[in-house]
Amino acid sequence: MEEMLKTLPQHTCSWSKGKITFYKYQDFWTLQELVVGAHLAQQSFKAEPTDIFLCTSTKTGTTWVKSLAFAIVTRQKFDDSTTPLLTKNAHECVPSLEYELDIVDDNRKNSSLPLVATHLPYPSLPKSVIASNCKIVYVYRNTKDVIVSHYHFLRKVFNVANEDAPFEEAFEEFCQGISGYGPYWDHIIGYWKASLERPDRILLLKYEDLKKDPTSNAKKLAEFMGYPFSTEEEKAGVIEKITTLCSFENMSNLEVNKTGSIRVGGLENKHYFRKAEDGDWRTYFTNEMKEKIDKLIDEKLNGTGLILK
Ligand code: PAP
Image (cartoon, rainbow, N blue to C red):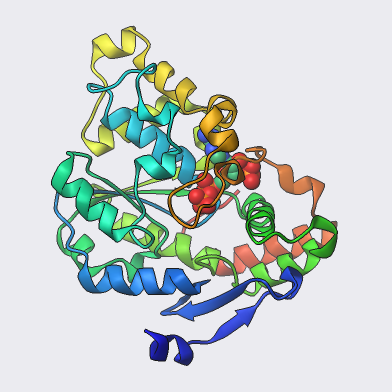
C-alpha cells in the first residue's frame, strides 16, 4: 500500500494550513486512509444480491439517508422509542464500506441488516456490487450548499479555525475538482448515467426534495428497498413517525449526537450536524462565486440531461 500511495498525485489544501492532504486514487480525491479502505474494499468485498447500497458523495445527506433507511428496514424490530438511532449515531447503525469493511462483513454474518454505505464513485464500486445487481440508493445535493458544508466539516475535523481558513480558497479547490470524493459533478454523473441504464436497481434522491417532502420520499425509499409501508402503517402515521425521528431537529438534539463520537477515528458526532439549510451558501458566496460555479456545473452537466438546482 505504501508503494502505491507514493505513486498517487497529492494535493495539500492551501486553506487548511497544511493539515489536509488529498490523494487522487483512480479518478477521485480522498484522504490517505480512505484510499487504503477503498483499495481493500475493491479487492476483497463480495457483495450479495440482497445488499442495499446507500451511496453519496460527502456532505450530501449521508447521515440522513442512513437514518431513514435504517429506521425503515428495522421498523418491525424497533419502534421510535426503542430504535438504536436514539443512542447511536447513524454512522454506527449503518457501516461504511471503505471505513469499516470488517463491520460490514460481521453485520452480514450476525444480523440481517442489508444496508451498506459508501462514498465511492460508481466506477470505483467493487465489481461484485454491480455483478450482484444490488440495489443502490444515491442521494445528491445542490453543489453550493455541499461546498459550504464540506468546508466547515473538514475545518472542524482538522481543527482549522474559521479565521485561518479562507473560504475563497476552499471554493477554488472545490471548483478544481479537489474535494472529498470529488470532482463532485463526476460523482453525480456516474450514478446518474448508471440510473438511466438500470432504473430498477438505482434510485436517485435529492436532498432538497427530501427536505421539501420527507413523507413521499421516505415512502419512495421504502418501496425501492423492498420494505413498502402497508396501508395500515400509512394510516397509523408510521411514515411520519420515521421522518420525525430522522429529522435534523430531532437527530441533532439527541444526547449521543451532541456529545458522542463514532467508532472510526473518534470523530465527534456533532460534526455531522450543522445547519441542514437549503440555501445556506448565500451567506458565503459572492456574486462572482455564484456565477463561476453555475457556469462550471452547466458545462460539466451539459448533454447529460441532469439538472442540478
Ligand atoms: P458525511 O458525508 O460526512 O457523512 P453528510 O451527512 O452527508 O456528511 O452531510 C452532513 C450535512 O447533512 C450537514 O449539512 P450542513 O453542513 O449544510 O448543515 C448536516 O447538517 C446535514 N444533516 C445531517 N443530518 C441531517 C438530517 N437528519 N436531516 C437533514 N440534514 C441533515
